[in-house]
Image (cartoon, rainbow, N blue to C red; front, side, top):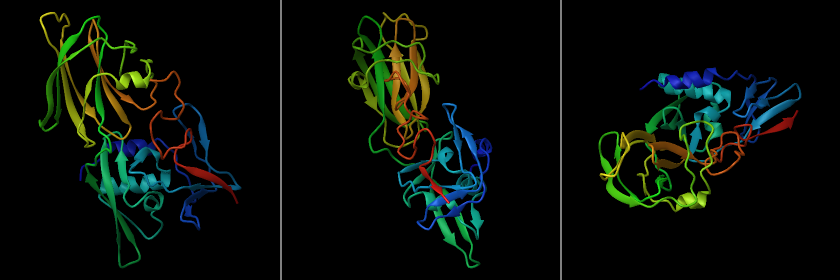
Length: 294
């Protein structure tokens, strides 16, 4: 099995919490310790004190991000993925936190896994993960923003990393209406380009439904093109947080980058911890949980 060094890196960034147990309702509790984890906005999650325990609710959504797992579950998952399995006679936290059909999603590698449980004869249980390639309910889209004063013709190619071609077409696009030109599409802090409803009207193409990497190539055609270079190629990883792959053509250059839900591209203010469209996150504190006084 391929080793995922990113897992160890992500897990090591967060401190351990102690005393985990399962509540009577099947939820996973942490008590008797404090884990102060800074989120992306600089706030801390103070987990527990002498009289407080935290119940983690079950998340049954299709994709479970590894980085959002409570630390005890994350440590067990890390071992199972990196070493091939995790065997214990104690509590397995991951199955108690997720749905039977939920897929583990390791964000940095954009890899997805189904989990399996095997009961052994010595009262132990083994947790394993099998890599899969799931699909989105609705395909992600590539959008073309023409920021010149004239119509332009482009050639667009979308292919798999194994060179299977899904789109290979030429398209003439008019100047974008109500969409701003931006200077960067890769930074953490995004420039506001306009309203999402106007972006939806931009021309473009749909990606295949599989959550995986795709190669995208765009070439500005015609003798009138003064751009040098007049083409760009990039590898695009489609994941559950993906909204658009944005290609901006201006008088000076071609810009390309990923747009994710609520990352600041279509709103002046980010209103969540991650800025992502993720049902299993309760901003700004991470995994769904509630505090219970003991």
